[in-house]
Structures are given as structure tokens and as C-alpha cells.
Length: 438
Image (cartoon, rainbow, N blue to C red; front, side, top):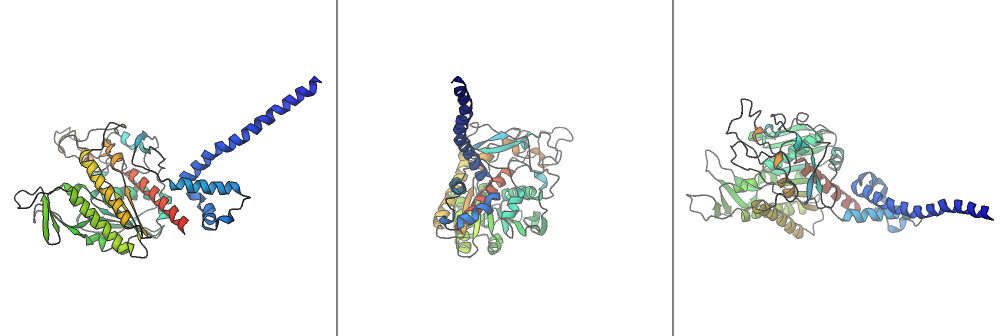
């Protein structure tokens, strides 16, 4: 009698274990499936898109798992990521490109070529609090922008971001410079033959119409706040996606006009104008610009996708011509540095105006707008600027006390590459949404 009992016991045990394990295995797989869908949605498109666009009945009950997959995919895609808050974490992989491999970097931002000795600043990546920011995939970017024209419009930050993007893309496909104009080549266009993509940069440091101060003319900028700058706006019909980036030029002395009236000025002693702050002026300039985009492209059948890159903080710790102007070689840790003062105010205005313009354009189908909110993550990177290495080998003849420093722009490669990683994630999200709407 004892023997069958023992036999039964042996057989029963693994069976009950398997019975227990199967559901758990299934539950354990769900996060993996979610993870796979959320972070790598693209290769799955060809599977999910036909099912999503057809009527719901076509997801037959005989394939509950596929149905679940699609449902999970929709749910996870809807919660969009907030890239604003997070921390910089070490990343031993380093950047996608090196400064010598792409010929589009402005000399002063090619820090390694100019002899910057420390390399630690290249080995960090931004880790948002609530989601993952994948590494930039040049081929995905090129695929999503096939047959399109992307324009960066604004000041030297717009150019800095554009050059970062060109370098990241050139690791997959070579850009050809097809147009250049203006002193210092302020208007340029590159063409990617592999995907029929044009990427341009337009110098427009106020976005609205402006006359920059010069040695021959007045010693202050003149801004016409109710007119968009036609140097770029005239080409608007040929632009599919636009990245706007302004801020630092609003700190310079200027006289502001609205209509034919002088509205006031910023830091213009000797002129009989009312001194007004530049915050309201920045707000008006962005308002005028976004209204022009909505009026001209919203009405247009092909629409436009637009980004406003938020203010990028400078990190001068002393005078711009003193040795240790921005001497740090590591990011700030979480909680070390608060976003406050002018940096916070400039960002706030840009984010508010983007939100207001979104509300004003809800009825427009083909107009998409997002703030590329890079202020906080950039604030945390005092180590990412050229500093004295804006000049080649500034200390070749020994250390001098006075040397010009750039603590505003970003080394390439460097933290600004992250801006384009976020740009790509938003473009991926938009692409996914438009496929779902079709």
C-alpha cells in the first residue's frame, strides 16, 4: 500500500509546481511585453497597424494574446513621457560620434580638437524620473523624416542643436551642404540623399523682425514685435518640421517697436525711452511667431510640426575672461542646483506660450506643437561647455590669467545631444498617433 502512495507523491509534486508556475510565468511576461512595446514600438508597427486601423471585430477572440498586446500598446503609448525631471547617470558607452568624424561642427564647439584634456563629460546620459530615454537611433530619425524639410530657426543655440543632430545622423548617412548664405554662413541647408531630407538652419535671434546692433548703425538691437522675421518665414510653406530656439539675445540692449510706436527699451541710457523688462518682449516675440505658424501653416493642407526648445542656462562662475569661468568637470547631482531666477522665468514664458498656442490651435488637424523642455537637464551640466577651449589650445604657452570663455554653448559631442534624443522620442510619438488616426 505504501508504494503507490510514494509514487503518487513523486508525480504530484512537479505537476502542482508547474500548475503554480504557469500563471506566474505569464504574469512575469507582461512587464517584459510592456517594456518591449513601449521602448521599441517601431518594428511592431507592421504587425499592429493593420489591426488597429481595421474594425475591432477583426481582433478575433481566438487571438486574445494579440488583442491584449495591442491594448497594452495603446495604453502605454498614451502616457507620454515627461523628460523634464531626472538625473544624469554614468554611461560607459559614450557619444555616438566623435568631433573629427563629422565636418559640420563650429570650430569653437569642437572641444576635444581644441585640446580639452578631460573626457569625463562625454560619459553621462539623462535618465528621466518616470520613463526611459532611449539612445538616439539615426536610422529611425531618417526614416521618420523621409521626404521632409526640417528647419532650425533662432540664435546660436538653434545652430548648436542642429550641428549636434547632423553629427548624430552622419553616423548613418552623409549630409551634403547644398546652400549657404550670410556672414558666418548663418543660413545653410544640408541634403540627405539616402532619404530625400533637407535640414536647414536660419539665423533669427528674435524670431520676429529685428535689426541687430552693428559698428556702423545703432549700438542696440531693434525689435519689431508684431512682425515675424521673413528671412525664415518666407520659406514656411516648404518646411514640414521646425525647431525654434531663442533666449540669450533678449538680454542685450534693445529698443522695441509695436506697429510704428516705440514700446520701450531694455538698457538704453541716453535714449528717451521707457525702460521695460525683456520678459514681456520675449513673450510677445514667441506669441507673434506661433501665431504666424498657426495662421500660415494651420490653414495649409500639409500643416507643420513645431518645437520650441526652452532656454538653455549659462554657467559662468566668474567673469567671462577669467581663468575659472566654468571650471566644473562633472554634472550637478540631483538637488545640488535649483532652477530659479532668470533661467526659470525664461523657461516658464516659453512653456506657457506653447501651451496657449496649443489651445488656440485645437481645431487644426495638421498642426502639432511641443515644448522641448531642456532647461533643467541643461542646468545640471556645468561641465558641458567649451570654456577656454572655444579657442584651440588656449594654454599652449602656459596658463594665462585672462582667456575668453564660452560657458553658454555646448561642446560637441556633449549634453546637447540629449536634446535631439528627446526630439526623436516626440517625433516617434507623433508618428505613432498619426498612424492610429488614419
